[in-house]
Image (cartoon, rainbow, N blue to C red; front, side, top):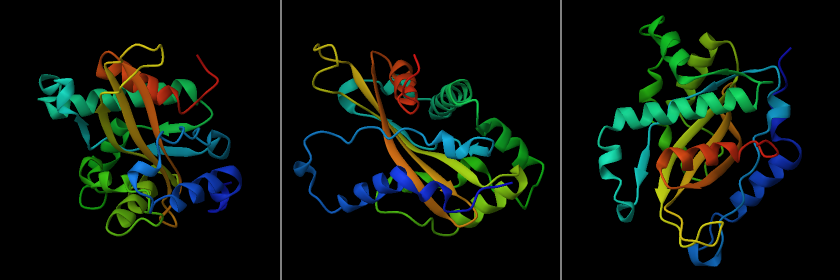
Length: 220
């Protein structure tokens, strides 16, 4: 039996969402440190089929000089998708994850009905003031999840690599991965949880791995 639409909007996660939205009008210099990563609400997702949409935006600051690593955008996106899907399946097995590769297969089996998972324009969901998903994305997600057989969608809305001043060990770190993630109830078109997961590393994939791991704290 599926849970009511308000399941993920109750308790601490809803309070975190309200707190983050209440800070949306502040100027950047009013917040000296980034907000901590909010843990993925896996307890509310246990037993559910949850779609993980493909990443559509990856970028790096010029100071990192990683241009050659991302010259093949499709390859970088696919590698990022693989890392996220693999780690979530291993670290949150109570959820039945439907990854990007399976979403593409579902869409190909329903041409003209299902949207292309790679062309849904999800990066705008990074904006912290968005609570209700507008059409056409709302309709696309509802249609896709009707074929998948679930209601919740985890959307990696963007991956940005930045050069931090100091790493956790006190030495300059090469890069910080900032992964913007939102959880959507496709039946009501509402965002019930959002966060920015961060991780540091000397290469993009190590930094991304650590960022995804931060979504499920308490595990090695």
